Image (tube, rainbow, N blue to C red):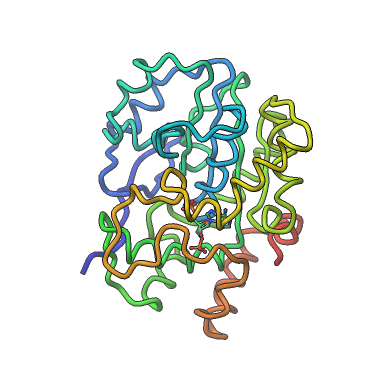
Length: 289
Ligand code: A3P
């Protein structure tokens, strides 16, 4: 069975982190020790399936005067730990491209990602129940994973943090706590983006230093809608190879889809673990539907 057994990587803090198996200790050590963060580097940070691609699209448009550019979002705003593990041309990309402003995306836990006061970080969180459903469909349909466990098997592994990128609860809590201490980490939620995309786009524009008027804002919002992105081959994840009959990377794009998958027992189980991990009621209320 294709499972989701993660690679165990030791961080510089001595803790063990769970990453996809193609990432090695050497890759992560290289990232920690050799990557030089430049002024104004921008990182979109998420637990996977929380709205990474959506935020990549917003940032791509904001940094490019509203233009999509000629390459897909994972070329334009590459996966930093993926680059260090050899994807998308590997780290040579970092040095070959003299980009005026570099932007990356990452799923690394807070304590594995190199941090610098002169860089900016946008963290997107999403209700862990909806992340679970999105993650299950992604793991099942994305060719490189081709997970063939059942929903129930996936659910238990996910709640225990025995999946790629470990515990969703730790990931969100640690980035949330860090964002409370640092002006250079903007914390937004998928639910907030669904409620008012224009507000979030304006907030991100202010954070990254892009000036805008109403027309520009409306343009970015329109090009970042689910429908617009789903039709856009540079924004819809078409570069990620999917199994036949996959619903695609932009699967449903809604809040509350967990209700079509969770049993009553699973809801209670996840909420219990979440409650233990987040004695932080503010984080809980932020991610309410
Ligand atoms: P679903 O599987 O629930 O549909 P990531 O980019 O982090 O892998 O997250 C993918 C999830 O974000 C998918 O969730 C996808 O549909 C959703 N998503 C991507 N773009 C979106 C948009 N413009 N509006 C709403 N949801 C979006």
